[in-house]
Image (tube, rainbow, N blue to C red; front, side, top):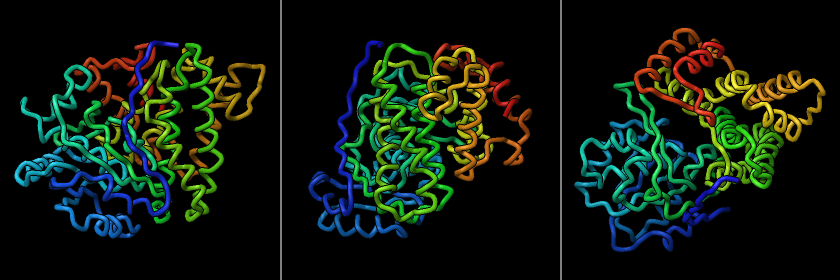
Length: 386
């Protein structure tokens, strides 16, 4: 096991009717920005419950955060935060709204030039400060409710970049699975896939003797596979929704990454597809993950075989066949959620996408993967095979 540090200060309040606890979680005597996206929170009941819980608080509303939150939208919110003397941001919605809240909280106090630098310099230039924030999360997918990461898109340059900093951990996250009853089937499927791939990025790499982390990862994947198709057909089953939500939170709250080797190639390539073609994030993951596993089948062989054995019960003596079967079963699971796994399914030319992403990687001198072997040419080959 590798050396590691673990820190997660998020106060999670999980269960039915938990928005009612908001008054004891929020700070008094400070102005709050209530941040949200489109109309979904007014359909699932979270908006009405939040407004009721905010009685007696000084707050303003700011709506319109998009899926894959845009830099310009966030910067307009930053202007409002500064002019309105906002002291706390309350995000209500899915992971995109929480990601936007994190960036707005950081950008509002950023005094070192263009706040886009926060995303360009993540890991090399820690934030000096950020506004406090909390969230009421209504969609299980990104795990943003329990981590300090965010992803922001910039349309002008077709970029989608990530940043992480402990100063943007939510102070609290309220999770009421009842708000997910009204999710469209597409979003439910997206959340299951996003959560599953979060786990795989930390699990199918190479072994550094972390059996506990492996069992935890396998437990989350198995739960998603068992419950995922069921919840698609039974959207108002509270226990199923609750288990999906907790899988999503646990997939990316730092527990699984303790002492292990991580990949994140699938996510980084997926961000490029989203930025260029506006594909749903999870849809890009379903396209790219099988291609990454095929391309890296030698380097990842031991863990793919373990994944196939522990998750799918594959015990073929022919190791090449076992690897193929594990990847095939993964694709079939995505198909069972009605999610395609080829670029052509979205009328995207794989060669065009491969060339564009190779050029981007060459310009940035990007290197990805747990073995630092996914360069511009490797990215080209992976995308071309999609």
